[in-house]
Image 1 (cartoon, each protein chain N blue to C red):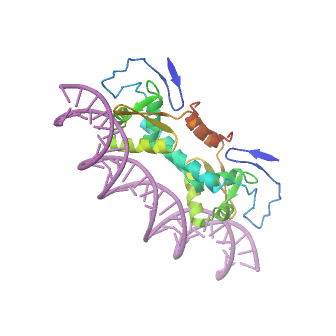
Image 2 (cartoon, each protein chain N blue to C red):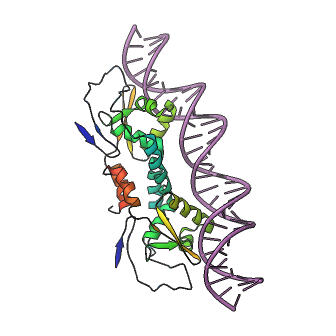
Length: 124
Length: 124
DNA sequence: CCAATCCATCGATAAATGTCAATGTCAGTG
DNA sequence: CACTGACATTGACATTTATCGATGGATTGG
């Protein structure tokens, strides 16, 4: 038998549950600490209302890119705050930064969000 | 013209970019603050290494459920800490709690992670 | 009824996070 | 060259978060 329910595909041994004891050992090979930390870091990057809206604004923009001043006003945030959030998204691999002249244009990294979504649905 | 790149599907007007000015108005209807906060709250729940591993442990367990003591040891966390994290996941709608006798069994809410993944890929 | 076990809640604490104002940096302009 | 505008970086601050120990509640076994 084998189950495949996101985050983990694993063989399941049907051991009779001991009723007088808890703590079933179960199929041990769960997610490693390394992959958990790596995944959590990426999710943490998008786990913020303003950063989610930034990604939304960027993806709904003309050329799927936006500069800081495009985001400051609709989000009602200071320029410094927007810059800080964008850096977090870039460091997490969600956005890329391209400086053209005075402006810095941010755009989505292709497939970044999809690979995150895949980690949740299970199809890696 | 219309783009559909996750998080947003929107009509795009091809306005010639003014080179001497930044801050393109773009297609305004980005993600609302309410949906952003709601989504961010759910992502924040899974944006933690230990909570990700908890979900993994639960989904890879015998009956796709686990109690607190099943999680305490492999994660090397105190019982109180595990209970706290599980509560966060329950409050976020990711897990459900069912008390049977002395033990509390946690299991995945069907479709919870998939709907989160869908918010990233765009197919709502 | 008493003791033991599993779990939730509370209080405390150190660390991380979101935000802003101030300053620094760099490119374009007069 | 001095100035302006866009952005990044820094410092500070309040809030949130992750973790633990201790306590309390509920259930099972003697």
